Length: 362
Length: 172
Image 1: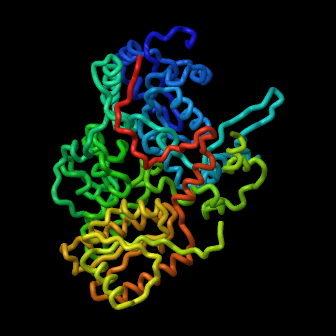
Image 2: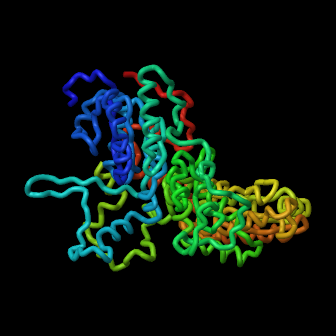
Image 3: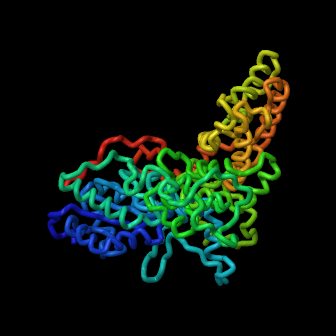
């Protein structure tokens, strides 16, 4: 692939700690993908083509015109590729919620990395009598096998390398992707100018509430509830007014308010709206301000209706928040958290999760 | 590490009409309280965006003290009640992130309660001293930097640095 002389600008897309949904959203461009193929040579896109890391390494710096990078930085391989693609790309786009603010995988920042491995390898649904754990290096008779190790926390792409543009969404809506792709193609042809570096592309500048067609009144909430616990959900009325914690007030528009329109609360996948520094802070402000009581005890009672406050207000944006992770995730506060099984076997196979081990592997 | 005893840094948010006046009164009355608190005056406790609290923690505060007029005495009718509601939810979120409840406290103080505010500040400082340093920024950064320090680049990307507002250039 790299042997051919590139006559068209190069395009790359990569997935780090992501589910692959962003790649699917790009593939959902359907015939618009032909425009992408027309305008670019796809040099590297693990989900769709057979490029190798070595192909990317062989490129000159900034040889790739644009890289869409989806997924957060959870392990050493993610980080290596983030740095590699940053070096090789003129424009690096944090593509989708994971790369922008951590998304669902970022919620693992509520736990110590050891807890995460305990859950994965010793959980109630896992049979692992030998207490096997991943190791960074294994000498097999056939040769040395190496695995990238988990990093202490998940970081967003721009916490690791400088990022040029952000495309929000979990995943970004295909129509928005088409706009972004169109803009980049036009910019390459000199027909359009790209916005300032650091801009959010493919999103609006307001909130989901602004796009939502439900009726809004003065909000006074005397009970928070989950949507399936309501006997009747009014199809016209603002969901938050019905006591359903809807994340619209803090969330960037651009999705067309799909969820509230379909009768489900916004969960915040488009990330913080313009001007919001910390998504969770903005959202908890919006929720708490409209609690209908002046009495501390009653206020507490109403707020009990939000059983998982951190998960509610940081579902997609914990890694990108001001605090970034829970204190439990700090790697060198190595005291096991209460939920962590104290009788979990020690032994050499637990070592690689230590931060020092990751450093050695480097 | 040095042997200097731990002196907590506490950010205190006060309202213009009651608690800041209470702190003023404590000052004019020569009531002593520990210098560990840095008071920031807002017009009203209702102005307190929870972002301020999280930013204080993220940038090195060991605790945050929120104070305002007593319920019913707000100069903007009921904004201190809104502050109370936000405080209640913020407390839960902060606890979920592993920060001890003692590091985020709410104290009402009228303009006449200089003595009482000084006493409460002293109490909070001693409680936080017992809890020890939080050092969120330093320790959190160390956690990520330990594993992530770019071997060849001294300029680690700083999340707080504004990107240069220039359009990216793409060349074919």
